[in-house]
Length: 166
Image 1 (cartoon, rainbow, N blue to C red):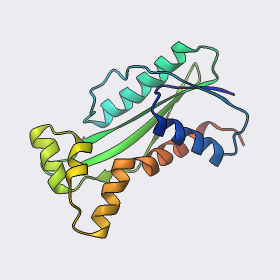
Image 2 (image 1 turned 120 degrees about the vertical axis):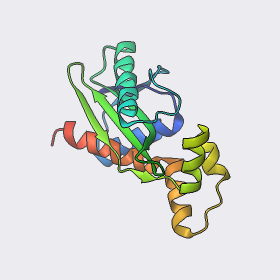
Image 3 (image 1 turned 90 degrees about the horizontal axis):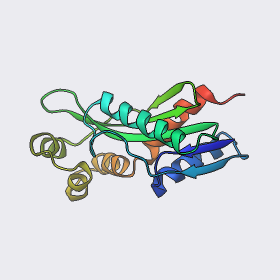
Image 4 (image 1 turned 90 degrees about the vertical axis):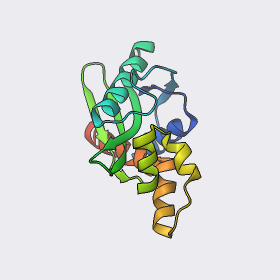
C-alpha cells in the first residue's frame, strides 16, 4: 500500500506510523509532502479543522497520484460559548474517489488559557506552555493538548476502522 501524508511534521509521521502498526499494516510505503492546509494557522471552528485536513489530504494526493491513500491531519479550536474553548483533531483519508473522516474527542482548554486565546487571539501552544497547572488533572489535560498524540491516535483509529479491510 502506498500512502502520502500531507505534512512533514515528525510528530504526525510518528502518529501515522503508530496507527498503522496498531492495525498490523506492515506492507506500506509512506511519502510525506509539505502542502498547504488552506486554513488559518490556528483553525477556530470544526468546519475549518475539517477543511484543513481535507485540503492537506487532497494536496498530498495531487503530489503523488500513484498512492492508494492520502492522509491529512489538522488540529484546532472550537469556541462553544462565551467561555468554553475545546481542542479537537481531525484526520481525513482520501482514496482517490472518496474522503473518510476521523475526529477525536474534544478536550476542554483550561479557562485561563481559553480566555487569552479567545479575547486576545493568542497562540494556544504558547499560552499552554506558560500556563501553570493547579492540579494533576489540569497538568494531564495540558500535556494531552500540547502533545496531541492521544487525540491524533483517536482520530486516526476512527478513520482507519472505517477504511481498513478485515
